[in-house]
Amino acid sequence: MATPNYSYEKRQRELAKKRKAEEKRQKKAQRPDDGSAPAEGQDGAPDDTSASDTPPNTPPAA
Image 1: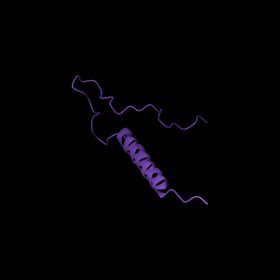
Image 2: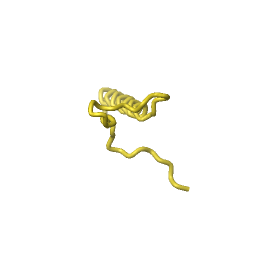
Image 3: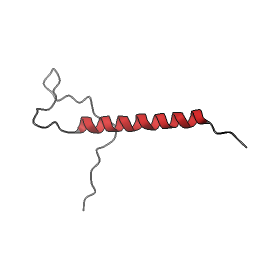
Image 4: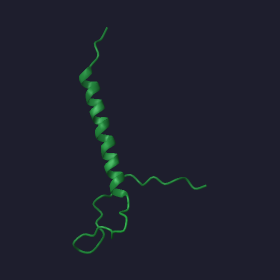
């Protein structure tokens, strides 16, 4: 019988935590700030550094 690979399981848990934290950070960054102007770069254009490769979650049209 094979022995459990605890190192692998621990690494998978750590990666899952990092993934969840990153998703939470991105979701928090996408939230609009209450009562404040949008972030702008030095050239006056909106700062688009938080753009992600995935489209935002939108509910299906009814």
